[in-house]
Image (cartoon, rainbow, N blue to C red; front, side, top):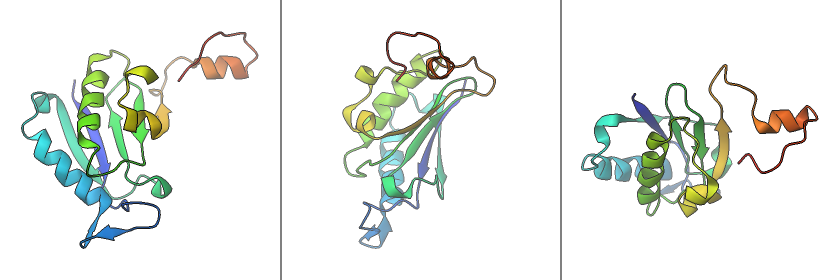
Amino acid sequence: MKHTIQVCIRCNFTKTEEEREGQRGGAQLYERLMKKFEKWPLKDEFAVEQTRCMGACGSACVVAFQAPGKVSWVFGSLNPRFAIPGILEFAEKYRDSPSGMVAYADRPPDLAAGLLARLHPVGSKPSTAAAIAAGAAVSGGDC
């Protein structure tokens, strides 16, 4: 199964700083990721794609993880200079999980702090959150 990491190349560095040295934060994140990705042992199991907007402009820089039949993740507020090890660490854990779920405690700190969305696969069973909303008594968290 091919997994995908998407990087928004139009993201600003921060909420108030669009570019540094003529380059957007997202473009720098993508370039830094690709340098490490080329030497990464799992590169044949992933595709890295650039996208021009993920609609999370207030949470620059933004990356997403996707695979068929798995939960998709979107993370923001990533620093292009320091986020690459965490991105690759999360990618490995994501690949190893049959459902794509990665527990909060197992996420690299910068990604755990920057979670923007977790989307369940189309057609999957309702989540615990949906069961709670429907009035079911459910213990424990779903994040």
